[in-house]
Image: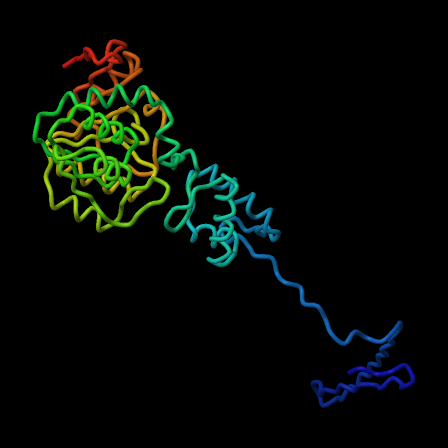
Amino acid sequence: MRRFPSEPAIPAFDSCTAAGGVRRQRIAATQETITGGALPTTLTPIEPQPIDSRQGRAAPAIPEDRRRSIADLLLATGAVTVAQVEEQFGISAMTARRDLHELERRGLARRTHGGAVLPTLAGHEDSFDRRMKVDAAAKQRLARAAVDLLNPHETVFLDSSSTSHYVARRMIEVGIATTVLTNSLPVMTLLAAEAGPNVELIGVGGTLRALTRSFVGAGATRTVTEYYADRLFLSVKGVVNGERITDADPLEADVKRTMIEHARESVLLIDSSKLHARGLTAIASLSQIAIVLATDITPEQRELLERSNAEVRVLTGADAAGEAIQRQL
């Protein structure tokens, strides 16, 4: 009870009965003295720090410190989920997503469904226009070798890679009669404008990805399953350990995987850089590829690819002039 300095101390009595009926009385007097100014009318609550339930320490309360800790966790584990970030740092799902989005903006993470992975693990994905300008000479050599495999009136899948665009252009130059199925908008545009009556074009529709200018999603894969092709020409983000082909985007990987399943013969077009990169999503085993056309790879890299039982054809300098392909069965 609050009293003011002018009020006398009020004694408080507490009595009890002891054994033998002796009554004892204890008097305790206390005096409360208020000094200084008036007491504050409102108090600022102290918000408790979130506790890391697994490690028993307070999670960083400052957003920047927390994001730095999330980046360290991502670096250590390679991937995190929104649920993990919630539990580890005692924050809401919305805050966890906001932190992961900010790390992605800074180039420290790549968002995935339900979490994030390291950019190096996901494989950075360039735009289609940028990829068209990279290693153009090597892609032209690969396109010449690919079209040389075709017989007239075959049905061909072309994926959304920039290398397949070079293959389509080479088809136009040669004038070979083919039926082409593709989910690449640039390939559709090119063939529709320049191929003429020799090429029957079947567009694979779906959801358009602006970055790659390709159609993906359930609609795209469903369309692919309705057809069977003689050949598939595709390229990938990377080949991991000479065993699995990978792509940076799961939806792109779904389309490529479905094309492989519906092609009589799948032909992979790569240069040596693909053996040092890997994408987020596995497409298929390299053993599902019939032929690998490769430029600028070493004998050791060739031997690694051949362990999958794929036929590896290494393009030599003579192929730049449209001549021989070095082949090892």
